[in-house]
Amino acid sequence: MKPLQMRDSSRTAPSYRRNSPNVQIDPIAIGPDTPLRLRVAAQLAYPDGSMTVSGLRVEIRRGRLECEKTANKTYVTLAGIERMREKCLMDRRARASASERPGGGMEASHDDAA
Image 1 (cartoon, rainbow, N blue to C red):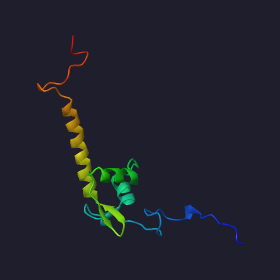
Image 2 (cartoon, rainbow, N blue to C red):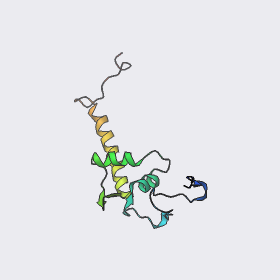
Image 3 (tube, rainbow, N blue to C red):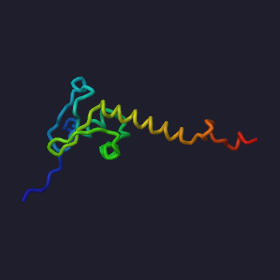
């Protein structure tokens, strides 16, 4: 029986896909409506790594991110992510305005009460 050999990952080019051969993606070929797998979309839309596949799935479940499913694979677009971000901004603004008093003014803070 042969001993298990570890793959030397330093010899392979970076890949956006976990279970496929090394696939290099040309960012110029990707338009706002190009269907992208969640991992690729997260890496392109959030290059700092702050958004993950699970984060995009949460936004899909909440109804803020549109997706399409083909062959049990989930795809989103960069334009869809941009619309999601706009919805998140509107949600945040709505929550901020809900804290206003009915008279139109903001609730008084301790500093304003004097």
